[in-house]
Image: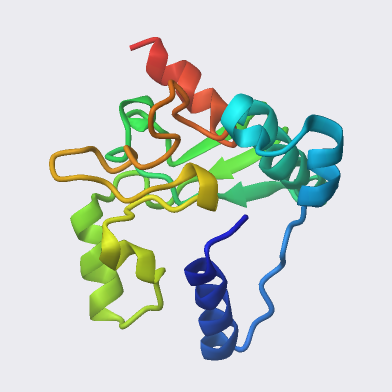
Length: 171
């Protein structure tokens, strides 16, 4: 359930760097998911939806690797404020590297602009965090960088970074 702007970014990356990004797909199509769990599962049970559409596919994909790289940063949410640069990921049972953990939003944008890097056009429209279309909105003035994700619910993570949420809630 990616935004068209996200798919356009993948195409720009493919063209600019002459690489083929690997698309990790959920086991169920949206129709198959609706057949099993009814329509719009994300509105009733966003945790299950994220499990089916993100966690399970990511877990299956990562089984072939010894480490994975995440773009999360400490300044994004309170739960991420202590994210280590390198750690053991208990959930996927491999090393997790977060090379931008110590970077700020400003540092990221300075780097992107200095190198004319491709980025998701939604960032220009107040989407500092981009996820699935039904669970992501632009942020309003004064809101945190992650406020547009699962707005109106208690959900703060899709589950890929679940160990960080536990760490953050212990603060």
